[in-house]
Image (cartoon, rainbow, N blue to C red):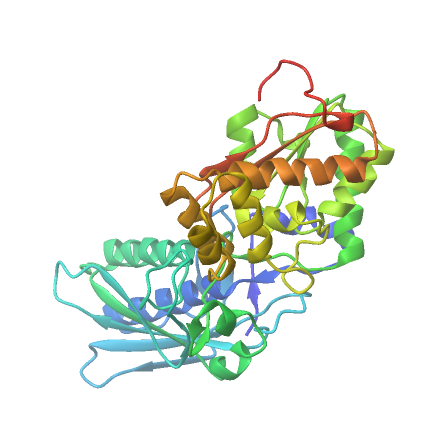
Length: 387
């Protein structure tokens, strides 16, 4: 039921931690979809089934279940999620994909089966009423459907119904119900790989990253919450790979270590919602230990000209992203305000260390939605270089 892989990536980075990476629900759904569609076109389920992840890894997944409907217009395959050494509530869940042929020109249609949630509130990267299958997994499945169609003479027009055994029950242990995702789990993942969540191992990796950057003579490093923010800062500042610190949720670990081992400049880049937590004074950005404070965002928006009515909407918004979109519609620069406040919080943790800081907030697609100026100890503007 497990998967093996080739291609390096995060797995190679994690070897020294002794922790085993795993696979996202999106990767498992893609594997199951690929197997089911292949069976529809060829009459045989590939087992194991190999897929290609966004960063080039090629894991092979064993099938836990498989079946073909009478008349062979649909097929189902299932993969058991292996989260590696990550304490993930979806570890061991059976993720099924039922693929049904559609008339030419229909494209790829996604449906939520039992145990997969449906979006019921705005503020997420999916429209209300859509299955809770995030954009990257959707694209992975589209790409693999297209590849199977090209290899075996299919049209690529299919309906994909995803389900998770006991998913509705498992979802009660997640934030899905609070976010308005009802009926089950979300199909998630931006890289396909689950990085094991070990505080001590991850923080040790951050420290080693700072050490390596300093040893290489780098004067500018970036603490990034994930792969999308890494791409953003690389584009903005043309930073080398050694300058990228895989901060994850551990903003405090980056700041406290750099306080003792300074670099000339630190850029912090991450999703708007996560960095709004830093702006509110939280140093651990994980959802289990800090939440987006919408009343805080409402108060901050007031300083940027938000009306009483808009502030009230922000305070009751479903998500941080929803609050941001409300402000964008009203020309209130909430993204910039959050970035500036997060920078000031970072400077407070640095306690006068000779480090200039700037903050970049992005949305889920990597688009910059907020940016601070560069400031050094005491909040002074630092230099006249790139903002």
